[in-house]
Image 1: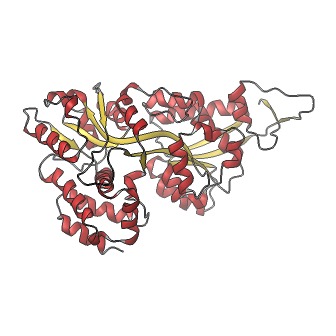
Image 2 (image 1 turned 90 degrees about the vertical axis):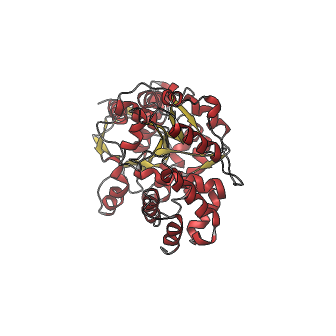
Image 3 (image 1 turned 45 degrees about the vertical axis):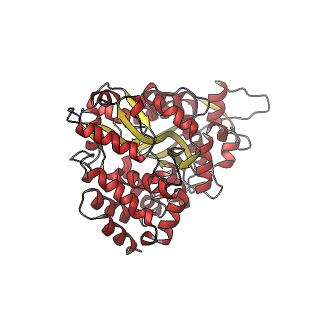
Length: 422
C-alpha cells in the first residue's frame, strides 16, 4: 500500500495527486500508512453501460493512489426510489449519484454540504456557471451535489432522414407554426417516415417545454404549486398543441413507446425527430448500430409566448456525499476525480457527452449543432421546464399526460383532472 502524507486542514489528498502528479513532503510532514478502508458508492448506472467502464477505471486509479477501495453497487435508474429507504435503514452508503436537481431537491436531507472540501481545490471554478447557480439555488445556497455529464435538451434529428423527407437547413423551425409545417411536410412526403417520436417517460418534456414557452418557467411552477390549471388558459392551449402532434399523425404510431423503443426509431430509419437530452445520439447509435449524423434545434417559440428559444432545459447528473458518511473527504475526492480533468474527458469521449469540467472545452462532433444554442441560452430551464416543481405531484401529472398523448382524454378532461388532484 502506498504511503501518503497526512491531510492538513482538510486538503484533499487525491486532488493533490491529480494536480501535481506527485506528493512532496517536508521534514516536518508526518508520514502515515492509510489503513485498508472502503468507500461504498451506489451508482445510477448499470454495470454494462459505458459510463460504468469509466467509473470502474477511476475507482481502480483511486485505490492505487490511496489504498482505499471503492465498493460499487450498480443500481441503475431505480436508485431514485431505492436510495432513501436504504439510508433510512442505516445502510452504509458514502456516495451516490442521480439527476443533480433531484439530488439537491428530493435527496437534500441525506446529503453533506460540500463547500468546505470544494474550496480547498477551487472545485467551483470547474463547474459550468449555469449548473453551479442552479444546484446552489435548489440547495438554498449550499453545494449539495457535484455536477457531471451535463446535458442540453431539445429536438434531435437524423440529418439523413431530414434530407430524405425533402427538408434543408432553411426548414429548421424556430416557431411552433414552422415546426407543424415541418411535420406536415414529412408526413406528406413519399419517405414513409414519422415526423417525431417519443417515449412514455419523456412526454413531460413535450408539455413542459410547450407550457413554459407560453408562461415562462416561474409561472409554470406557480401554476403547479397553486393548482390553478383551470384558471390559466395557456395550460389548455399547450395541451391542445401537444395533443395535435398525436391526433394529426405527426407522431409515430407507437408513440408514446416504452423506453427506448421510441427514440430508437430515429436510428432505425423510421422517425426523423425526438425531443430528448444530449445523451440520445449516443444511446440511439449504440442501440441501433447506426452511423447517421445528428442535428439539433431548441424547442420552438409559440405565438404571444413569454419565452423563446433562449429558454433551454439544461442539467447534469450529480454526485452526492451522504451526511452520515465516515468517509466524506475520501468520497468527495473520488467524485472530484471523475468530474474533472482527464477522467471527465474520458467520459466525454466514451459516451459522447458534454464535458463537465470547464477546463475541457472540446465537445464531441455528434453534439456540435447544439454548441451555439448552449452559448446563446439566457434562460436555463430545469427538467421538464418546471413541470416537476412539486415532487409529490409529478407522478399524477405524468399519468394524465400519458392519457392525453394516447388520445384517451381530451385537453378539457386533462385540465379538469389535474385541477381536481390536489
